[in-house]
Image (tube, rainbow, N blue to C red):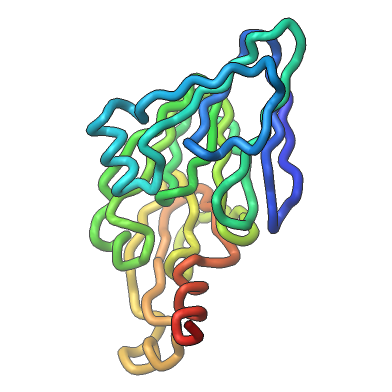
Length: 219
């Protein structure tokens, strides 16, 4: 399997070349185009009730598609995400990683995506009541609104709400005011997410909630 991410960082898309017999799993409607010898099969995302829960609480689609090369030569399929922004490839080697709802795009066989309770702190941080947990070995592609950048944490770090895309399970999160009670809300910053621990976090340079707040008064 060969892969590349082009169009970075604003309009990223994934190009995956599958050898005969290889396959990749993707969210519904993630495919842009593909060669004719790639077979696509659709199934519920973990069964009806699990799929429905992932759709309602995890930002995923009810169905997922499996793309398999049934030809005798390499075949190519292209994926993207619904929003403009960056895409990050994560090589999974048995570690776990948490993702914000809607971040998952596609993955190779061997990667499992589960829905996990995130708590009310995550909800107030505009990251959702639930989060996605990726486990297993293989390749995982996740998307974000804006540019994706990594930050190694060893201690504590402050992140504006709705900018946290993914993080290691060794990282814990909690909310705090950006300043004093009055300055926190008059400054426009409000709440911040304090991440602590030792590990890696992925951040997005833009947020959909920030875009919505900007557009709402103008509509």
